[in-house]
Image (cartoon, rainbow, N blue to C red; front, side, top):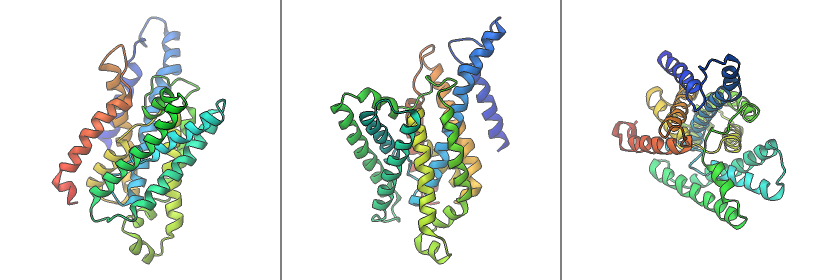
Length: 311
């Protein structure tokens, strides 16, 4: 944990220093202005996004009882984008807060439908659930793309589905702090999520209120997804790779895993953002694109890891 915190601090320092503009010039006032206006808000947005998506993934994996499920690939992120698309069509001048609410509501509905459908699948074969999650996310994403194409909004949809932080500045990321409420709810319900992951029959036998726990988990996942997609766009695999790797080390205790998952998510997204800034400097590759490559490779590594499959 200490090593992870030190790595996070080192990455924060790199993030604050990397960019086309310099923060070490002779004009101290201009350097400070650049830091406070662009670099610091961007770095904070990256940390908040990585932390929240990783914890949302941990919660969703507990709800689905499957380590290969991620909100951004299993229909939640796509549903959030569909909600924003609906608001854009019906109320083009709506504020960012209205778009966040619409995105979260659509994400809630999409995730609830997904969880309801996978109850029909056998929990004994995790790959079937993972495959269904990808197919389901593809269907919802295709529906959003079809609507966006019809109304000539594909460019906007691409922004919502491709997470990147180049446009983050002071005054354009503060809504992400609302994620703190969802994360507090995840911590509050953590022990119940651990019990829920044991199976419905066991959880009922232990006196768990299944509906309340499911509802709280759904709110956490949908709120985080709605806020993230509306503010910075979707980042794939963060909520899959980090919780799955941490659970392999720490087990299925959600409360015990949350700090490490949060740290891992922040580090992973920071690395992706910094890499995106450096690979084609002075141009940028979106963090979502880098994360897609890194996350897909890590996902394949998890699939082919025999010890992980048998855990």
